Image: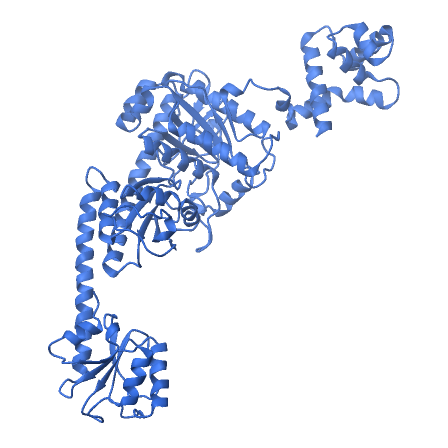
Length: 633
């Protein structure tokens, strides 16, 4: 505890006497200061014990003393020490009455006690208090360190921290979910702070905010009857060494933290950062390992992949998994923000042409090719690094990785632009961490590839994330081409494969890409492979290449009809819709069947193609549907 007026009065060497303000002697003293000015207030900082001899004061004037004492109280002076036997043998009545009226403690200083002795006593007490705080802080650091490296890890650390601050503590992961709290009842309080945690996570790290205030309960006590998070004073501290927050520590107390408690909190932040932010070398090694495992799986080498994965990903390959491919469309606002905010040394490398790929890039028998990049992919981590990932089909060259750090180039103090891929990766990894699942996450430039257990929490978290985003933006399905500009908030599309094993990884990747293509065209955020065949094929025709093909195929018929020499396009549509039934189609058009037969012969002559060919009829029907879709939009 810092020195108080009471501790100075009890000091055996000072011999101070209390003349007024006996009920306020427990007030802490920040410093002892001597001033004979008639108005020392401009030189006060608050919390001082002011020592005077009254040489320059009209100490016997009631009005003057009333104004003097009132100004001292307003400036935060906590006590007044009056030297006895210098100018006055006793404290003047006017000063004593003014001190009593304002509630300012008034201490009598005997002549044999020099003011410097009081200053030294205050200084020594402050130094001793600081030493105790530092010692307690070091002891807390040792205890927290032992807890952090123990079997219980962060949970034990939070318990020790809550005990040190006489309050509660909670840890949030990168997605903002509560992963641990101490005592147990604090989890409910921490859950109510999710909005404030999200606000903190949107700021560049390191950052902190204070929420609420008022009374609370100690760490070892029972939960207060009023279970509201704002009943306590809660400090939220971001965790992580970079600008991107890897977690948040919440500390709730009944009062502002003291020096020793502050040391404990800072130690906890450092230790939790070490547990959530692994060393860069370790992350890069895990990135390369994860990408290597994925390359082997897609190259049809599951046994080698399992051997390389070892304990890190081995469990993931022992049961059916789902493969997920997510991308940010090149025209989307998020893509532009990511490119604008990426530093020059972290910008995505240009895609390699097939002939320029490394010689050791494995190619599966199914035609799935794999390119090798530097610092490839992350495993259970989305830290910065480049990704080596697969492309499908001949001539496909995926970009050689990009950073996953959101808004790395944002100005200091500005909120980081949202990175949909990083948010998705954090969401899935956090869900997997809570249930102990293994999950393989590999960034690929503007794409993200994930292997997650079928039916596990990571896949479910992905689905919930997609539902939440679509619900939040309230959009309907809007078909669009691959290069179409996407409005802000509509930047992420995800394709999810059917359950597969290691031997079928290449097929699962193709399924995920097919689902991704359907999601892109249907304007959906997430499409599973099982949903690819659901619904109509017509939305898939909303592609510029398909429309160009349709326009070219039917242009001659439209030009013929534009001269007023017949309605060949409408006749062709009616005939195809009636499966070549002349009478039914003619009745729909309101013409004789011989007229319709003549028009179909003209269609064959103009197009130079036979309507007896089922492929021709199919192409013409799809062309008509594509042009109709284009006209309707």
